Image (cartoon, rainbow, N blue to C red):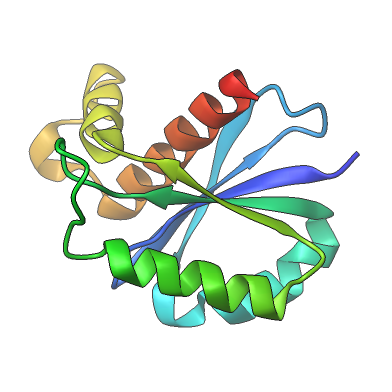
Length: 135
């Protein structure tokens, strides 16, 4: 069974999370430089049997765009063109980075010393877990 990949896209780096084959559990995967994301996907999509990509979709509380929302819409278009065999979906990511930072802190990592890449991975896993729970 194919898996779902979640991308928490940022201008510098993107956090990635992946589901198990049964699409029940989301796990942090890795962080990649955003300028290498497309190349990473070309290699990993067939290798990991990814059938669907969830993009964290950032909006403000009132639903308006953030500074990166348009970049996410453009990324979705690029991915749909490059990987037409995949389902590409946007999914609300409000508060995912704050929740990830809080979860990491609860595991004993001090907030000031938290690895931003780890926060991005955990945020992607939280977004994906929420998506899987609603599917």
